[in-house]
Image (cartoon, rainbow, N blue to C red; front, side):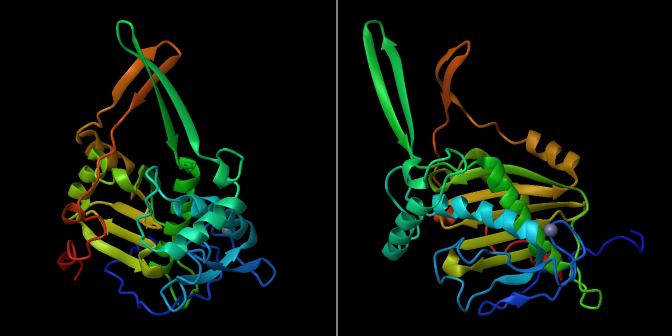
Amino acid sequence: MTAASPPVPSQLLTLPVNRAKLLNNVTCPYCAVRLDARSRTKEHVIGRRFVPKGKLNGQWNLILNACQPCNNRKADLEDDISAITLQPDAWGVSHHGEPAVDDEARRKSLNSLSRKTRKRVSESNEQLKVESSLSHGLKATFNFTAPPQIDQERAFELARLQLLGLYYMQTYLIDERHGHCWPGGFHPLKLVTQRDWGNVTMRAFMAETQTWDLRLHLVTADGFFKATTRRHPNANLWSWAFEWNYSTRLVGFFGDRALAETMVRKWPPEVRKVIYDRPGNSLHYSSEIPLRDEDDTLFDPTTGVAASA
Ligand SMILES: [Zn+2]
């Protein structure tokens, strides 16, 4: 590593749980543009309206300066992704267990436009009708109603921005008043909703990265926002994971893409069942696999810590 290389977080950052971290930075953490008094806006890396109202009061958040275009773009991503991730799942269950949050989620579903369907979130349930020939002479029709779905690319872009903000904080130089971006790319891997947190890719991801050096462990907003990053013990490769509003998890890597691909190729494939498969007309599905609490190591802060000393 040369002297010109940007700094890399070398140890686990311990975050005070009861107050926000403020940076008086002079570059935008999202696009690296130099900020001045005119272009500077105040930015909350965890949007105050991304989690339920008031959940960040007296809890950890990261507040810094960002340019207006990035700030606007991130707020737009947060709007419907917050409304959708706060909705109950396909079985009408919300996994945070707070009735007041369900009321707020209903209000948000009326006021927020799903960027995927271009309709209000409250009108964005996805209907799927399947007609199937089970055996000779016996036809069956299935109707599925799925809750509103997030546009996956937008969700990964929001995760990337949140990660940029957090990494910028971890590499922040007080004298120079700016942080850094990681070397290498951003490699999103999987987005899953709560009933599928135990799917084979998520389990393989947890098993692979569990012992890597923990570099960020963040649980805030009464658990409505969780984040973790880990560094491969001897390569320029990091894992990242977010949990949003107790309903959605996103995981991936950043840094050395070739190494990440080599690892992922060795994981067991996800099993997809075929309902029918005709040219131009097919329906495949994979069963959701729940995750038991005792198997959930994604945000476990006790593994991979000793190596960071
Ligand atoms: Zn910017």
